[in-house]
Image (cartoon, rainbow, N blue to C red; front, top):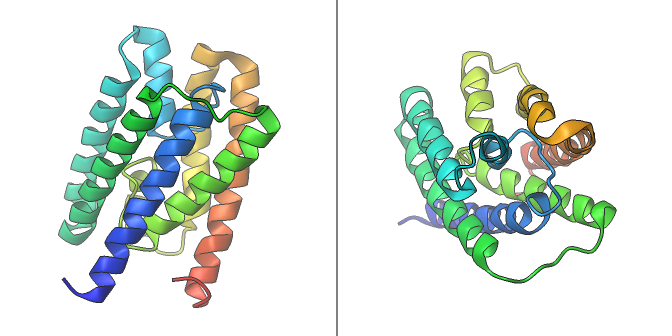
Length: 199
């Protein structure tokens, strides 16, 4: 395996470790929904009573199929690896009986940082997180002028609209703020990557 591929796999692993931890230990316990796969699963869990782990895996499989059909083999293989890492880390951290919660503002900031870095690690390695970024990447492939981070934000806002029914106004407001903050941080990281500042 060449060095570039090794670096990409390490970045995908680290990115999903950060995201799995953040979603399991800050997002889910604080009921912060932001429009991603875990948020979709949280909404569906609240409505159906089906365990979040099953729902997360089901939505991930659906997005992997979309990835395979629209984003190509290289992206699909890395995204498959990414989804395996994410589901392993989310399941592991969700199942472990410890908490790292401090309070909502601190948890919010830490989750924003971990998730934006996690997304960056995957996207900059030509991988998706097999989250709503798959839909944004499909749209980007059709129109390279769109901003991926902002498109993810808008897709998250749509999911948050459905979250209003399941979690109420406070969770949605926090989710809107979260989507804005982490997508802003992600955009800064992606711009630094394009300028050659970050790998």
